Length: 131
Image 1 (tube, rainbow, N blue to C red):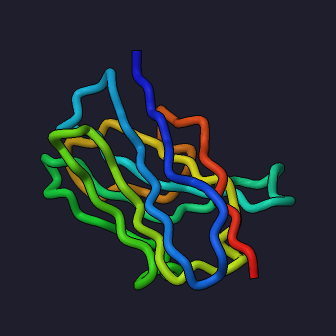
Image 2 (spheres, rainbow, N blue to C red):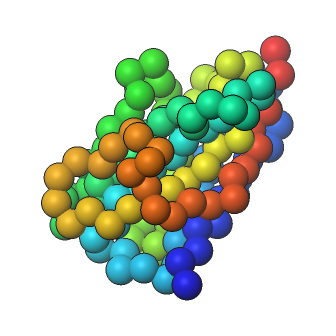
C-alpha cells in the first residue's frame, strides 16, 4: 500500500521559513518522481498549483520549480529516509495554502507540474503565513 504522509506545516509570520516533509512508503523509491502542489483558500474548485518537483533517482534527481517561486523554495530528497523535503523561505501571506505531495512512477525524464500526471497523493498539510 502506497502512503505519502506530509508534515511540517504550521503558522508563521511573513518573512519566516518552514520545511515540509513527505515520507513515502509502499513504492519502489528509485523510480518515482515526487512533487509538491498547493491549493490556496478559495481555490477548492481549481486544480492544485504545482510548486516544485524532483525527478527519480534514475533520472538524476533533477529539481524543477514554478517560476514564481524559484529562489525561495528548495526541494530535496533523502533517499535513506524515503522522504522529500520542501524548504520554504521568505514566506508571504500569498503562500498560505494546503500543501500536498504527490508521486508518480517515472524511470526516465523530467517530472511534471500537472496534477493529473500523479497517481499517489498525501493528505495535505496546512501552511498559514500572517502579515
